[in-house]
Length: 115
Image (cartoon, rainbow, N blue to C red; front, top):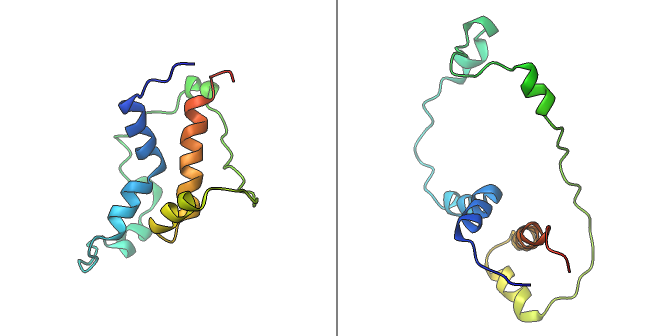
């Protein structure tokens, strides 16, 4: 089996899992107040909301649509090398989520491959 690194797929995986983006965003200063008037937004009636930029939902859309249920998280015990665990723990408190993301990226990349 030949493995070739595909940087575009790597970048797509990073964006799709939001871990790197969320990590960087969580370190940004949050002193700026939001300027959205949520009371006004909540008071809007359906006919007052501008939906002109939303494409119509056609029969073709519903024919191709698929229901996607969220993945169920399971608890398990797994043996890993101590240096690997230490590295993930050094990345932050959400190290278990990062380990799951790394495993998911690997699994998705190898889904079509035959072992």
